[in-house]
Image (tube, rainbow over all chains, first blue to last red; front, top):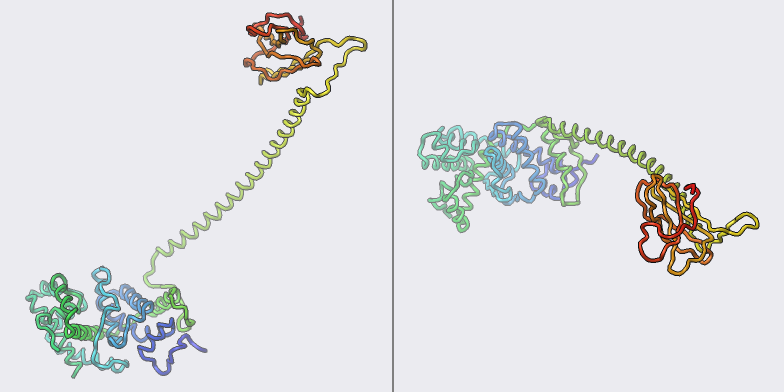
Length: 186
Length: 274
């Protein structure tokens, strides 16, 4: 029995770009395949930020509906899809957390990731590296990074909460991100 | 290419979406002209993406997939080249059960019942209206027929060209004759006279109503007979509620007041007993 994946050869594990191309032609089967591939990432990021399963499901729905309506928003030449989805999901979740209107259109976000994460195995290896870097990172730096990224706190709010100078918080956030990049590049 | 150091920290904050105010505006202006800082921004976002990916682990519930596939199946996209959906069966969203949808169905059901009730009532009213209208139309038709017959009778009585033949005792000479039909309730009066003598110069006939209460005679119309001596008076202006005792026709001067009899009686009603 033929499935809706008429333009996607599931046995050959189509690339992210192949799925997006099929979605552009209205292939709902390709959309389902893309969801199966990335829904865990999107849901995990949203859940980490929002700390609420229902709200995370709303963001999950929102992100994939936007992708369905505007698959051209993702350009493979502009970034890795997993990282791109993670970034726009985090943005959307922070917006939901702060109960504000979305500040970024998904088309506006360009994400550049050096390591090749085309496969689940590639992604898994990259994640192991990042988690290792976080473990070895000074706790004050990791804490500032996580508060800024997952809690959506501004550097001023982090400075107020930790009692650290504003400049110190700014630098910790930046150096923390650079350390992750360095680990991945190694 | 190197990142401009003065914007280095702000680039990370901008990538996080936490830079605002004058610092944000200054950085945005700078990014428009600085490709190296734009590149660094993309890399920082990539770093943040990798940080986000460390959260991977929990999977969304199956209902989320059903919810999404149901939504996109119902989405009316501009693209017409749709392929059939075979990977998921559309199902209604089940997350966060709310009473609002239930209330919506209840309201919809109540509305349907109300509509059915109103339709039935409307049907009954229309049937009653149709029945009443049929009765009214039947009455109206009956009235119209009666009015038509009455009009024909009146028209015949008033038609000057109608053949009018007075029958009298054999061998007797026709005498002036009149008949007054008076309906006190509606103040309707029809008077028909025949065999009247031609009017002398400057004279006119006048009909009088003599009230039953003995009051003064009431003028009921001036008239002139035709060449055959016939004349009619129909519905002259009369006061309301006057019971008639008798009617009298007098020959009056053509000019002057006609509010009280001045001339001599020509024909007199038998009801007066006079």
